[in-house]
Length: 264
Image 1 (cartoon, rainbow, N blue to C red):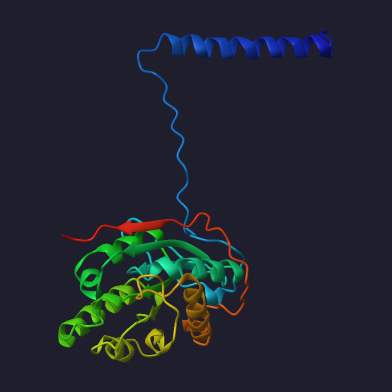
Image 2 (cartoon, rainbow, N blue to C red):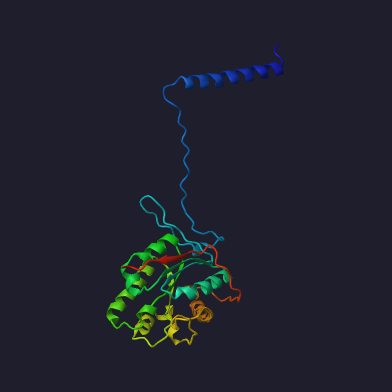
């Protein structure tokens, strides 16, 4: 009678023999053995996952031919994109500070020197940056280079096109009107008319000016955005919560400044 220990050794030996035989057969086979590992396709893709939200906060996912639409979950934290003309030089820092103080993120600032509503309306620049950075909220600071234009019918169409692009992409926005240093010829009233409560009448503020006598100084730009933040917060669900103000001026980190070349 074979003892249990010897029986175990016999089984182990048989196991090694079978394994050796398997690899011997593979080594003499003309066709190599291919093992393919595939990652399972998730049903949902989350851009942000700050916390668990109740079901009513999650929009229903719409199925397409071969993919699933992205669900945006922000849980109060917004991804802010700032776009516009040279006014962004002064606005970028206070916008960043307010975002940081209120648990939002200024994901990028797209500065187009000398640009107008015509430039942003007739190019794909706005759509490009929205699709690239996927903001949940957009600040538009535009109109300073149009204070003295008088083709209001054309400007009206440009502005409508910009608003239409933003709404089509499902982005909430707020238009910061031009901080005019002189009386304009109608662009400010037109912007107010077309944007309604989503417009800040910056031309009504008395602001100190930089050396060029046109743009607000750095300090004035902070006072300017203090007023904007109050009005944006009042919009509640359609606005951006910027209720917390801190006087600390932060160094801007992980928020690129994108300089756009003017069309020739």
